Length: 250
Length: 250
DNA sequence: GCGTCTTTATTGTATAGACAATTAGCCGCT
DNA sequence: AGCGGCTAATTGTCTATACAATAAAGACGC
Image (tube, rainbow over all chains, first blue to last red):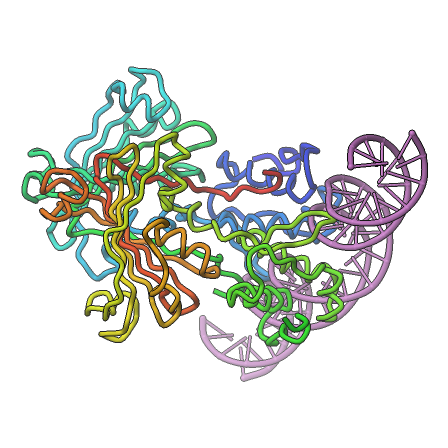
């Protein structure tokens, strides 16, 4: 990789601290500075941009508050591991959430195939009807009870490797978490009565209430992946807590 | 009211900017500085605390980012109107959400009574079994279709006025938004099959999947109110979008 | 090699001062 | 009374500097 100094420039639009923030954000978003990458020190950045340290500090602090960067005294500043989505609406990555509660996690892949997007999926993923997507269906279990039926569509235009990926051992959630740089996400929650097929997969009675969480994950304007996660309503709840953000020491 | 200088002091714990932030936060939380109140200017605060302006600025900026304070050049800094909870998980205050979509909003109060908390409610509200709470049940409609059945419990120890409040015209959501100072909130979402009674109230078939949102609203450690909001699953969804917070100009 | 001390790079916080941008409120004019 | 322009209060940003806290890396002794 060429020296970062050659790539990172300001756009002269808005406050300088925000220009710097966005410049660094871009490096992270493109994956150029991957998770774990050590950022230049404040001093180096000041030097490069020709600003005071407080200005660079403010940019880095904003990125830290957004969870994109982790900072440690003496060691430096690093691109954070992209686990942020899980933090907002809990019970997102089953593979990590279930062991945390002391239950035995199980995973089974039902199918993974490259297909043209049907109308509904194309609309939700902002793709043209018929665009190629990877369609994965799998089950997550806790102590042998099914807690989530996952249906997943991956945009092959953005992530062509997904067509070759092996989802037999690892769920698409974890795979994507490793592969894709930071993004935005959007959740939609609804409740449905289980169809016969779904009831069978989940191990519940037909007609039982199920909680459906659909998550679209973005890279800028593009949808990387669409996940439809269906849970038996009585066996699972989701929760989140918010308020004035936590400040200072954790 | 006595001069603010008599009330607001630092606790000497942690960074100064955070002490200042918390000191101001306390004024807001207690309702001492109510929504719309004009805060002292940065210069006054510097003077009072004996710090540099940047330090006070950082405290106020943090409060602004948390949505607790609104700042305007030349005019000053003001305590924000407490509309923040609605922003996080949308479809929260039906009375404002429904007209926003061009539908006709309707509200009907079914009952409002002062009762001792049963075991389940007491546990969720962190109260002693039998503590007095105001229990309100009501319906929200959009173009005459029921979109939400609201069951609400209000902690009378914290809000004794709730026993006398008239919930026939205004829903408890709006009333509380006006009455109670800023807090944290916690959501729990699940899906249930409608019981006969609930199905009747919502105007759906018995057994239909319903989305249940339970929200606990806190004042520090105390639960102010518990809301159980039940929606017909097929008629309603909730969504939220998140990612790197918006920065800079709106 | 293995512990212990020292050095030092890096971030975290705070200060004092400067200028820019915004705009509420006042003053004067008609 | 209404309008227009000026003034000044207030926030927004930036600089340059200083010292504190942390912990990695190196130096030293054994």
